[in-house]
Image 1 (cartoon, rainbow over the protein chains, first blue to last red):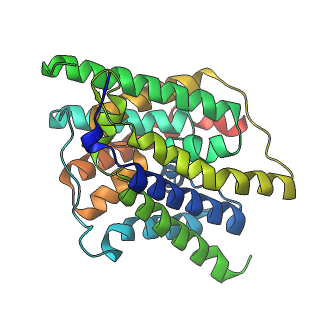
Image 2 (image 1 turned 90 degrees about the horizontal axis):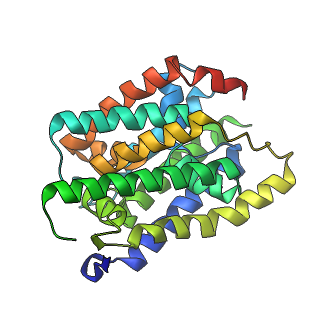
Length: 147
Length: 137
């Protein structure tokens, strides 16, 4: 392992993380709801009438984020190990299916679940971190890049 | 709950959540893959995103648990593990997880939009087959 110091952004990542934590805290205090993106998006797609209003309001705020700060919109780059379009769509399918049957993703299990000290969420986080790391390692080996 | 709180609180929370994802670097798939690339050129930044978020949220969640009857923690079942492993594969392949994918799609990334549409389809499949039984747990 070599740490990529040139790409390391401790202050921005810590500050951005604190904003995410603040958002989750505001939602749980104000509405007693969990800021889990896959749950919010998945329940809207599920056609759940109950709770549709707050979920749509949350999603509207989320989607507005890149547009309220000038210069931020469109600021997304390419992956380190870009995959083909079919594989990208498979990745989306796996993410959608996986987060629904596990009932949570990086936000619901990661941020909120760990903050609730939930054992289930710790298991989920360890599982998706581990499989994500294995997946990227496979991509790096296939790309021929030296470790 | 007043109508104002019911709409404004989640709207503001969603906005702050999205801004946090943007500021932290989560929206950049190269940075996400660099975080997961522990055996290569590792960028540990995203561990600090989780750390910063939990540092703020944990005391508030613990306070909320004390004020209200705590929701019991569910059991660890096979679907939790299988689903999380599948999600991790999708996360590693693309460099996107659900929140950043939606924000990046809104910002105009074609890759994030394609991934997000496929994710939505995966969620519908998960809602139909597999997630339904979990409502009872």
